[in-house]
Image (tube, rainbow, N blue to C red; front, side, top):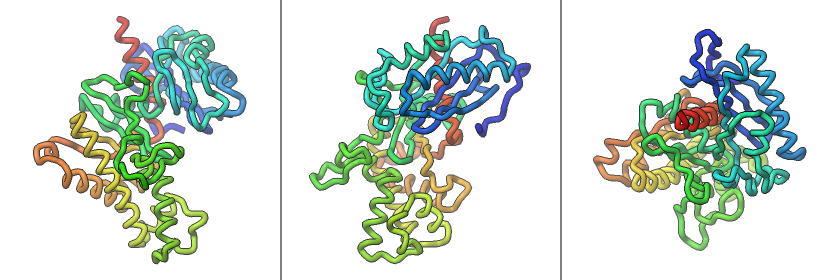
Length: 341
């Protein structure tokens, strides 16, 4: 389900755009209008092992059913946006070697989806799509630039400067999780095993759990002392909410590592807005641990930057949640469409 309000067709503004967000286990499909309103939403299983052709065929079939259920004629849909994880060649429309899609390597996914849908297709990294969603109608809707950092199993990111999504020469632009924050030869390895000393190795949910396990095995006292083997970021958050000082300390350490990365990004890009998204938000603004986490990130940034940069930079939680990907994919399609007019 989407958390976005559903706009009836009679209140929408044509033309329409499909937004498709491919994940490891599920694919989200949304139909949006020219103002970013969601007219319809559905989701299907990725079924990764069946390969990308099968998935794109099912995306096309499901999209047709979605249009029928909403009552929008396909002739009013002018473009689709596709967001996928992992390494890509955006100009060529190719998946390269997405780590969590081993059966999808070196596949011309844009051409495939274009043929299945009968529509032009815009292509983006999933985190870049989420960044565009937040920029279009989310936390960044009143800003011209932003950096989005997504915190989950790994750390992703997206960068928009003066309304332009940064894709980069190697389609690697915005990969904030792979920036170096520790150059030492003994620095931690990132979740995918290759990047030593990268932000992902310190500020992801995987890194949080690994650091927590090491601490508990060294004798740290916590409500979670007997849960080492099955420990998750969610359990650490829950313990912090119950007043477990050790859990809160581990979370605050994560915030400080994140602040180091944010400081470098701001000093290079000066976006004015940094948005924290992804599943690991420790409850977000509605929970004391989430608020404490955000405060600690802000504090760490403020201690490392210049006074006038501090005064001109906002760090805030994302507000589209898991919907950001399909919304942003549609938003990128919309942007590409309007460039052709």
